Length: 150
Image 1: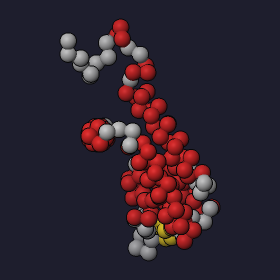
Image 2 (image 1 turned 60 degrees about the vertical axis):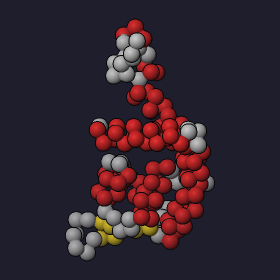
Image 3 (image 1 turned 45 degrees about the vertical axis):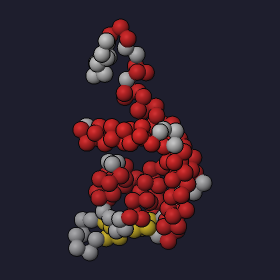
C-alpha cells in the first residue's frame, strides 16, 4: 500500500508526527548547540547571525540585514541595540538618505565574528556528518523547496 505523505490519517495522528512539531524540536536542538558555541563570546545565536552577515555586507541598513538573516526588522533593531551596547557594531547615518542608518562592525565585533566562525563551522560539520552526503543533499534540497514555497 502506497503511503500518502500529504495526509495524516485520523486514526494514526499524533502531534509529534507533524512537520511543525518535528522541525521546531529539531531547530531547538540545533539552536542549543549554536548558542553553546556563542556563549564563549558572550553573544547569542541571533546576534552571531548579524555579526556574520556584517562580515560579508559591511554598511548594510537594518532592512537589508533583516532580509538576509530572515528576521523581522524590529527584532534586528533589538539585536543591533544590544550589539551597540557591547561595542560590537556602530550605527552611522546614511549620507544619501537621512531616514536610514548603516551598520558597521567595530574592530571588537570583527574579531569576535572571525573567532566564532570556525566554532560554528564545527557545529555545522558535526550535524551534517550525522547524515550520509547524499542524504544531506536531499535534506538541503527539501529545505530549499519548503523555504521557497512557504
